[in-house]
Amino acid sequence: MENIENVEHNQESFEKLFEASISETKEIKEGQIISGTVIKVTNDTVMVDIGYKSEGRVPKEEFLDEKGNMTVAVGDKVDVFLESAEDDEGLVIVSKEKADKLRIWDEIAEACERGDIVEGRVTERVKGGLAVDIGVKAFLPGSQIDLSPIRDLDRLLGNTYQFKIIKFNKLRGNIVLSRRAILEKEREVIRQKTLSVIEEGAVVKGVVKNLTDYGAFVDLGGIDGLLHITDLSWKRINHPNEVLKIGEEIQVKVLKYDTSKERVSLGLKQMISDPWQGVDMKFPRNAKVSGKVVNLTDYGAFIEIEEGIEGLIHVSEMSWTKRVKHPSAVLKIGDEVEAIILDVDMENRRMSLGLKQTQPNPWDELVKKYAPGTKIRGEVKNITDFGIFVEVEEDIDGLVHISDLSWSNKIKNPHDVYKKGDVVETVVLNVDPSAERFALGIKQLNSDPWQEAVDKYSIGSEVEGEVIKVTDFGLFVQVTDEVEGLVHVSEISEEKIDKPSSVHKVGDKIKAIVLSVDPQERKMSLSIKAAKSGLGKKIAEKARKQVEKKPTLGDLMGDELRNLGTKKEVESDPKTEVEAEPNAGLEAQPEAKPEVE
Image (cartoon, rainbow, N blue to C red; front, side, top):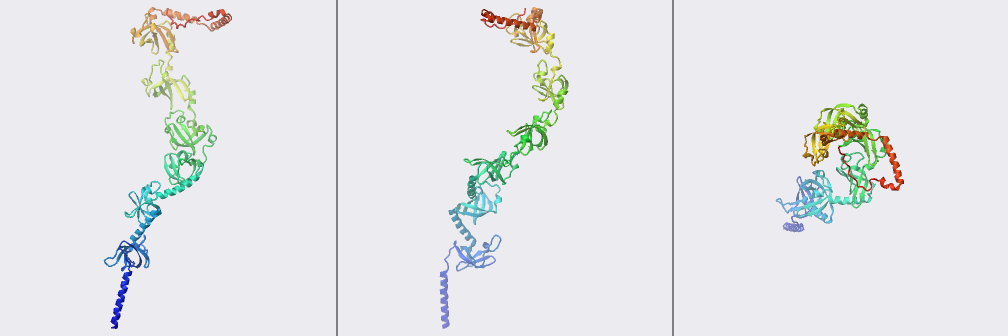
C-alpha cells in the first residue's frame, strides 16, 4: 500500500511541475522577434531554444557568411523571427534572416527621422540608377550618385559609400538614397575654405575636371576655374588635350577673380617666364634662323623657332619668281626650314620671316639681262581683264598691260584677241626688282601711228575716210587703221545743222581738210565744209604764217621788259588807271571759235 501511495504522490508532483512549466512558458505569437539560444547545429539546421514548449528550427544557410563559414555555435544568443508556431514535426519555424531585416528596417526608420548617414555597398545596376545594400535593398537614382553625371556606372559596383536617406516607406519596402547630398555638403565646406584664401596672383593647386575646345575647367576645391586655351602654353596648341588630361593635378596662377560672380580665370603658362622677353635682342633683323612649320593658313606658314616663339612666312615671301597661291605648295606641317628675320614687333608679339631671302634675288640679274627695248618672244601664260602675262623665263612672267597691246586702244577685252599658249613678240618696257614687276609692250614694236600722222597729215591737207560713228556733236572718221578724226557739227556744212545724223550715217565715205593734229592727246580735227569750199591751201598758208609768227625767247624777254616799263609809268601817273585796265567795265565774252577764211 505504501508503494502505491508513493506512486500516486509522485504522479501528483509531476503534474504540478508540468502545470508550473506550462504556466512559465512564454506566450508567443507569429510575426514576433524572439531572443533564443543555439542548442544544436546539424548539417542543414540550427536549433534554437526560444523558451517555448518546442525548439525553433532555422535553416543553416542563414548563419553562413559570404565565404560560407558558420557564424554561430551552441550557446550563442540569437534573435529570430517567428514564422510558424508549429510545423508537422511539432517544431517552431523561425528565421534569423527576417529578424535581421526587421531590426534593420527599424534602425533605418530611426536614422531617417534623425537625418543620420548610412553606409551601403553598390550591388548592381538597375533601371534609372543603382541598387545599394544597406542591410536591406535600397535604390540610388542616377541623379543622386555624384555632383555631375557619371557615364560609366559599372566602376561603382562593389564599392561602399555613405548615403543620406531621402525617402523611406516601410510598408512598401521603399528606400531612396542620395550620395550627392553628402558630396554637396562636403564640397561647400571645402569651397568656403578655398574662397577664403583665393586671390589674384596666387598660385593654387587643382584637378583638371573637364576639357573643351576653348580650355580646361579646374576644380580648385569646391569652386571651378577656367584655364583658357590661350593661357595653357606659350607655344601654339590646337586643343587642351595636347597639354592636359582629365584627373591630372596641376599648379596654376589665379589671373582674375570676380568675387561677385565667383568666377576664376587661371593661367598655366604664367607659371614659367615669357619666352618673348628679349626676343628682339636675341633675334635681330636679317638674322638667319631655323624652325619647324607648325601651322599653315591661306596667307602664310607659321614657323616655331623656339617653344612659344613663332614667326610668319607670308606667301609673298616664299619665292622670288613663283606666284604662291597657298603655302602648302611650298611647305608642309613638320618641315624644318631656314628663314631670314624681316621684322620683330614686340608689342604685338609678331615676327615676320622670309624664305626667299635665303636665296639670291634673280630680279637683280633680270635688270642687267633685259634692258628696256629688248625684244622677247614668249608664251601667253595667263589672260586677265587688264592684260596678258607672257613667260620671260621659267617662273618669271611679264605683263603686257591692256594699254600697251595696241596704239588704237580698241582692245576692250584681251580674251577677244589672245588665248593661253599663243606665242607673241614683245618689247621690254621696264623691270622693277623692288616690286617684282616685268613690264612688256606689244604696240611698242611698231612706231606710234599718231606721230606718223603729224608728218603725213599736215594742217590744210585733204584726207579721205569712212564715218564710223555719229554723235550729236559730230562725226568720227576712220583716217587710217589706228587714227581717227572728228568732224565737229559746225564743220560739216556751211548751213546750220542740228543733228549730224540727218546728213551722214555710219559707212559714208567723206573728204575733209585737216584742221589740227595733237599726237599727245591723240586727236585730229577735220572739216568737210572746208574741203567742199576748197579752202585747204588757205588753211595751210594761215597755219604756216602762225608758225612763222611764233615768238622766240628773245622776243618774249623783250616784251616782258617793255611791259614792266609800261607798268611803272602807269603806277606813277594816276590818270592812266583806265588805260592800264583796257577791259575794265566790260563783260566777259565767250571764246571765239576760229573761222576758216
